[in-house]
Amino acid sequence: MIMIAPNEPTDWLGPPSASNYQHRVFFHGFGTYPTTQGEYVHSDQFTCFGHEWRVRIYRGGYDGVAAGHDDVSLYLENMSNHRRGTVVDFLIYIVSPAGQLISTEHGIEKNASFKSGSLRGFADFVNFRDVDDYLIDGSMVLEIHMRTLHDNGPVLPAFTLNLSSALGESGGDVEVVVANVNETRELVKRQKRNETSFIVHSLILKHACPVLASMVDSSNRDTSNRRVVQLPGDKIDPDAFNCVLRYLYGDKLSKGDIADHGLPIIRAAHYLGVLELKLFAETVFVQEVPITVDTLEHLADFAEANECGILMEAISIYFVKNAIDIARRPNGLGLPQKAYKYIAYAIAMRGGISHRLETWPIVRVQERLHEHGICVDGLRETLIRKLEHHLH
Image (cartoon, rainbow, N blue to C red; front, side):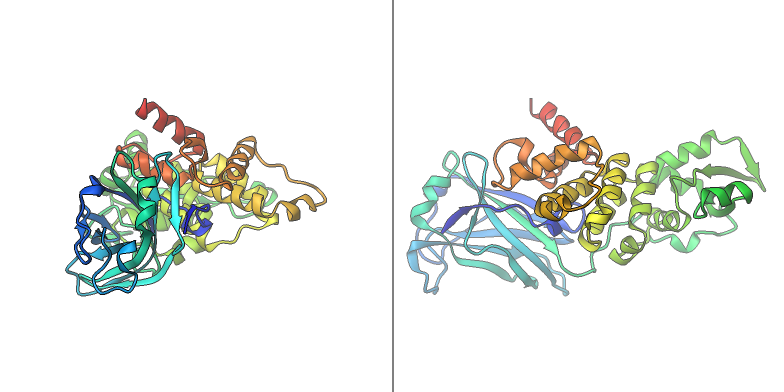
């Protein structure tokens, strides 16, 4: 059974560099592959979640399987030599000549455990008689979607060495001052703002956060032989900034860190240009923090102000799925203008993923940009314009 792929589940949203990954493999000249049962052709290797992978395809079926010669067998293979394996969810689409993602009846393979050299897949992936309809110039093109399940793959730090123990050392030559603005505005007017200071090292900032390093270079404040930088309290929360610094110093942030300080970390990472962390935090936020009718308006305003494409798409999908509850809201919603464009795209995507860029989930747009070395941060329209400009 072949069907047009449904929309990606919202908890699969995210950039390739975070907890989700997509990769296309090409089997050129599929009609020339051996039809003997048990003989296979494999794809090129690719790296995902710290492991090496490839795809095996058996045009004549996997040896010894009752499915027989009527079915093409397909398996995902872990090629790494790690003693520890990994556990992932994965699904495999066929890419049609029209650019549609075609799913088989198997859907998502959940909790798939992979040790070194192990195979997981489908003996009856697709019926042999259906294959020709989906070949592109004689080639079978597959799109592999994978998702990590455990919190053993946190965001990669900016440094390969963990230097976080050096945070706050007296030897740091930069003092970053962040105002605490958790009080009400009236209280802030009457009281002197509390401030939190962080002692950091300019060398690490130049390597891991050029935006903050440039603020240091342009600062004319100096205290105790340290350059002093004041960050705006409405942009930077002290607890979130501490998480950003840990990341910059090579520490690994877990999903728990992001869940505890999600929006402030996203805002701080956006302001400071720490894009890898921002994208990871967006992905974790839409996975771990439920969107509700009451939070929808605030999250949409936040997503627009901080150019959060992943979050805005999750909001639009929630809107479409919960339109009745939203319509019953007595005071309505004041969403930003760009949110309504995302909602229109979400409605279009409910009919299936097509070859039109406008109806691609944002993660697919980000993947294509990533393949061409183009920045994947930003709202949907910006990313689509980048991709269209590159393709044309």
